[in-house]
Amino acid sequence: MKSEQQRQPVECEFMPNDYFAKLDPSTIFDNDQPLELDLGSGDGSFIIGMAAHHPDRNFLGVERLLGRVKRVCRKATQGKLANCKVLRLESKYVIEWLFPENSVDRVHLLCPDPWPKARHHKNRLVQQGFLEALYKALKPGGEFRFKTDHPEYFEWVEEELKTFQKLERLEWPEDAFFYPKTDFQLQWEAEGKVIERARFRKPE
Ligand SMILES: C[S@@+](CC[C@H](N)C(=O)[O-])C[C@H]1O[C@@H](n2cnc3c(N)ncnc32)[C@H](O)[C@@H]1O
Image 1 (cartoon, protein in one colour):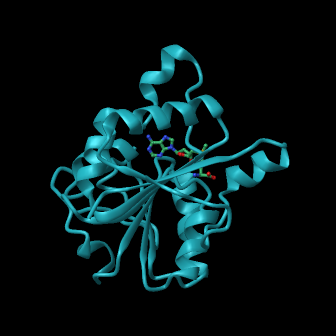
Image 2: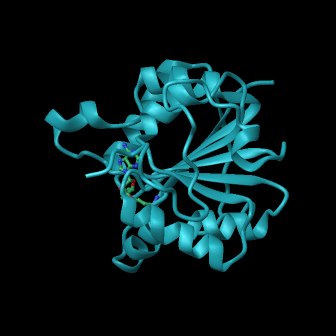
């Protein structure tokens, strides 16, 4: 089996030259447009919708499953979306190690695995260490946006952010701005589940 660094990237896939060095974000898209990350981009309805709507911003999906990476890349290629790429890597690693300080404009974490069992809570992405790294990676004024169908994970995130203190909560009224629903959100709403959302900003 080929290692990740020997594998040829598919079109629209971004592979860093060095997975152990800080990334220069301008090497991803070859321009200095604002950068948004979609952690766990799944089948990509959200990131594809955002990239099509905001050609003046760049979108990098982060997804660990190769099949999903390929699917989103195919959609980005078909849609001729030069501002959308996908990185096959683990979200926590990307935030903690790959992006330099003050380099990312927005981070989206939409319908992530809630790890509902108490003994699995340690696997939840939103914890103090992640928030510290997220805070560093965000530019001043940058945002973290979160959605879930899982009420207990939502409370967990609110508590973690309250404890963290350095990111301020913003209002997020329904339809306040263009924000496409993700594949999981559509599926869960069809099952009658309620999706909670929260939005936080790194102060200027
Ligand atoms: C529940 S799905 C949600 C997908 C998408 N955000 C949506 O709402 O439709 C979670 C996605 O995150 C990916 N994922 C889970 N843990 C991850 C991790 N640690 N790093 C990168 N991707 C991850 C999964 O492969 C899956 O595609």
